[in-house]
Length: 603
Image (cartoon, rainbow, N blue to C red; front, top):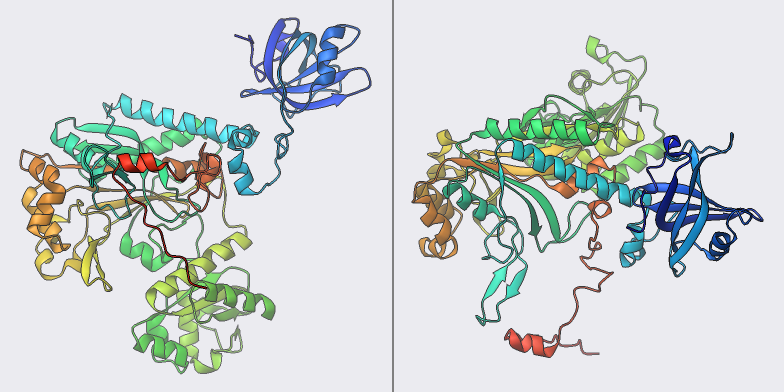
């Protein structure tokens, strides 16, 4: 080895010891004789002193060093002189007096500062990703990711799970997104698909009798990127035989509580994890992945205002829409300009407008004394005293609170009021960045009606089992069938989805038929699964937490690109390697492919 210690491990106990370090020049300071450098490696920083009176040859090397040069240094560990200690560094009580130095490599001037945590344009950070990863924050994110994955592996291994790899080249199957296709050279016109997840393969492992499987699985989905989505991502894939929902939920809860307390102890966890129904969270938060770190639940005001004199409310209810509101604490004195700003925000999420009600400091809604002169709103003249009182009571608004009300179709109300809820929580400092509010969402509908395509589509995937008592509804009212499906959410993000699977071939065929697959197509696309289910498939279920999203939350980042070593940009482009890219005609010929040239628009 070119070093016998790392740059982050030296302490006062090493004083007097001769050590050899190697790393990058993080900072360099020339004090007109003495030269100081902060030497950096993966483990941290050590201050090195070059004194021309002690080691002139080493000082000559230091004189040539620049930022990001790679250097090897040998010297004695010394206690820093009193008053020069650096409490911000783990090695801040010592320094190394260099006796030898060897330049291992030079460096061009980096395109951005590596030793300063300042924002840079993202494509530049991705173009020079190998430099950006040298930054302390990125290094710490990647190291924490390693520790999280190691904990998961150790946790599952201790409970009898086997880590089993599944193929990357597989058959195209419907799992909710577009596949990445790989043409076959040996079989012209045929294609492999990259797995959106190992879903069917892990089910087949249960049929094979392995009972407890896991895999840190790479998955691929050809869909538009966003802050918490990438074309390729990593999930902890888990499947178990002879289980029910509670077995899987308890496993997840135990694993994630232990994980946080072990590898991220600075985070706080709400225990036990709440179990909420899909209907409940849609009603209270307008989202199936709610952030429950703070209140401001939605309150349905539809029945209160259905007969009001305010046309917007009355017409919305008559047309089948909803009227919902939230109470924002302490914002009754918002100015007209601030209220107009909130209205524009609501419109940006699809609402046609926003109704605000400021509850005066002297009002006492819960005691029945709310009157129109104590609630400031443009709609008070259209509402009776009883309606005003009912709105304030249902929203649990206190004196000094501001009620925000949106009317419209359910999806619009949920999106706009949900956006306002997050916005106001941020403004009021109600979101604790170190609090992890995990929750399980249960009782999803098995399928949803696609009005455009005029067919039922699975809410999760076609292999999710329906609640046994709801199976008769498959023939009469599929939209009322509840799935044995569960989501695992945290701080407004879906961490994972999972379900108890269908383990009966006849029921699986029935579900596929309900979703629009003919018997022939079902056999063609899912032969391997349907046949396997006929050979004594055990009851089984699983879940697949997304590691990238979890890491984004643990690291307090706004995008999963900040916790991945080599992500794509927002347009799914690898700007470091210039991918996707064209390939040679010879490669296309081998694959029997022809590129269709798009016609240029006529001028």
